[in-house]
Length: 144
Image (cartoon, rainbow, N blue to C red):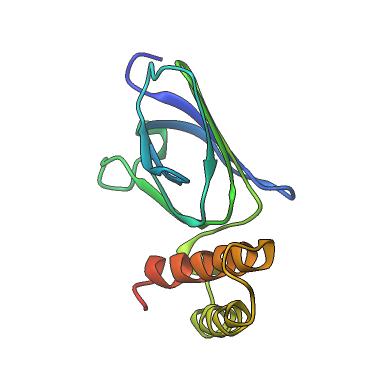
């Protein structure tokens, strides 16, 4: 595809998106990574955050502009090849899927649990991932 790249986002229970994009940006363990068509082969672990993708013309809005996909995603992996990007995550939530009060409760609970965990332990890292995912949901909806 000359001006786009095949993009698929998958969770264990569903295919969230399967189409074409001109740009996919995800939060890796090393920072944000943007993938364009013809990207060199690349594999990265993902941290919870907001995944963004500029979708190609087949997903245009009613005004003919390319649309943008934004999702709060949990931990996972991203593979980029010159002709496709595949993202595998445990959870991916769109704006309408986020319940702000529940996200705030999960954030508070994970923060409290993390206080009792030893820094650097697996329990501490699990709670940090929960904190990051709840925070991403709140950022996606414009809340803090």
